[in-house]
Amino acid sequence: MVTTTFIQQALWALNSAGEVFLLTLLVVRKNYRSYPAFSFYVFVDLTMGATALLSYRIWGFDSATAYRIAWGTHGMVLFARALAVAEVCRHVLSRYRGVWALTWRILLLCSALVLSYSILAARHDWRLALPSADRGLELSIATVIVVLLLFARYYDVKGELVVRSLAIGFCLYSCFAVLNNTLLERLLYDYSVFWNMLGMFTFLASLSLWTWALRKPQFQPEPGEILLPRGVYQSLTPEINLRLRLLNEQLSRFWPAEAKHS
Amino acid sequence: MSPFFYFFFGFVAVLLVLLIWSLRSPKKQAHSSLDAVGFQGSDRRHATYLSQIHRALAPADLEFLASRGSAKLARRVRKQRRRIALLYLSSVQEDFQKLLRLARVIAVLSPEVGAAQEFERLWLGVQFSSHCRMIRIRLFCGFATLPQLSGLSQMASGFAVRMETAIAELGERAALATELTSSLESRGVRPR
Image 1 (spheres, each protein chain N blue to C red):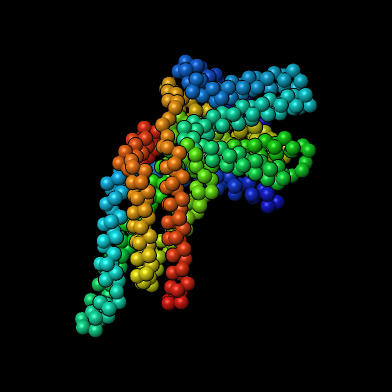
Image 2 (cartoon, each protein chain N blue to C red):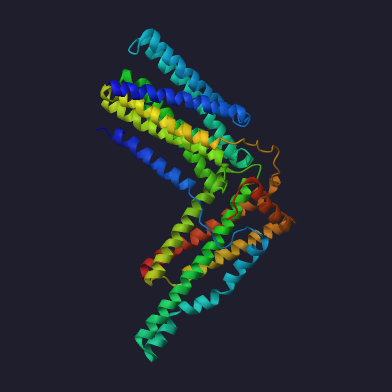
């Protein structure tokens, strides 16, 4: 048990040091200008971690006050993470105004659906209400990132390496948090120590990826992109879709005939 | 164990698979750009070959060879012609994909896109690929007949011609093609 506690503390210290280093890097390389929400997230995570640690020291690890503070700070971190993920989404697609207008609505819808389903699917145990809500939010975040990257691939939009690294870090962390919370729900207290430790370990992995991605200064994208005239899409897209529809109809007509033939 | 327990694991597994797939580098393709010249030329070339493909797949030739020559020769010729037909199908498919890419580029560079149009095209694209795959399987097994191929070819080339006409009507086809290609490169969009 002593070993587990030691590993937990060491991981906590390592994560905090990593966050301080990343924040310094963001400031020194002036990357906070390009990624203000991400910088805010790292800052919030660091300060909330310190707040939780302080509350454990004052009220003890098993006290109700410390529990409330820990989950309260976690909620704030999640909120900051959601902002950072929104920033990542904006970096990937917002330059393409038309597609972005479509994408953000779909992303919002996806996250709302996943969150609702996750909460409905949770075991309705009051002790697990917060981990269940946390899992729902993490699953929403992971879904948003994956849908965003699918959109980017579909439209052949290649995002910058930094943005993709941030997205991967968020997605992997959120996926792991979902699995971790699901196991916690099943195994309850037997798993709580490992739950905490594995969560910190995953965060360390994401933190390393982000630090590597942000090691160099990033340039802000040029505003005011030149887009095609409004009429181009309206005149060409229905034409393309009509042709595709006709093709599919023609192919569908062949199938029954072919089936009879063979 | 409740089904929800497995649901979360399954969902995460699906997300991870999709994440890896979305980050994968796209396949290298023969035509690497959406230039107007390449766009114009290839469709017409494939359409011109249609009569040859028609002849290659006609059963009369094979029947003649089987009756006058040997069965082995007929089999060999059928195999070779099937290979040619498969290559032809690939070319038509490639043309179609190129046109789809052009449509996507137009969407990316447009200030407004219609959700219905985008989803319809996505769905039709999925249908087209699955149909092509099935025709390919049938062709490979020796079941497919000409109408399937000619239908595909006419559709793809007709589609290209109408697209060209539409672009020409805008009176800036060449400028648009150049603009598209350069915009793609400057914005990090990969013209494949």
